[in-house]
Length: 224
Image (cartoon, rainbow, N blue to C red; front, side, top):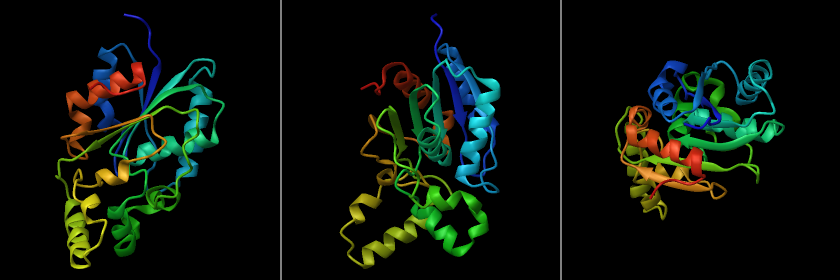
């Protein structure tokens, strides 16, 4: 089996590196060298977490060797910020899983009700104001449409509010993974986008999600 790029896996809000282990093991079986990167999702801003990822790579990775980046939820926004502000790394492919690229309505409600629950991850990230994707970055986006998770209570409330208002965007905010709307994952500058029948956390242990992630890392597009 030929040597493939090193893959840095970045977890989401309220998570830790071990949550990415099932996906890491499946990518390793495909020949990838993986590392589960950990960061403080609530205590530090997206800028600080990008800076620390850069510092970690400076110590642990040869800049001449290409990298692949895979991020779940907030981790995908850290990828967005990182590739924008640290362009000297050779980034081959990026994949995001359940990442609210356009901002998170669920996080908007939490920020208004109990901002400590999302911490510093909201500003410049979950609020939808993360840095634009550079033209040279190939990004594959995986979204889930299995509505399971605590966040669905807020999303159901939001949908009822839109329905009462006869809001023209109501149809855009029906499909979600229990935390993030499919519509929030769509980024016009992404190389590819695919919707899979998985929940926000369930996608991390789903073998087909791992297969699609691997396929994009190898081919720059999802398998159809």
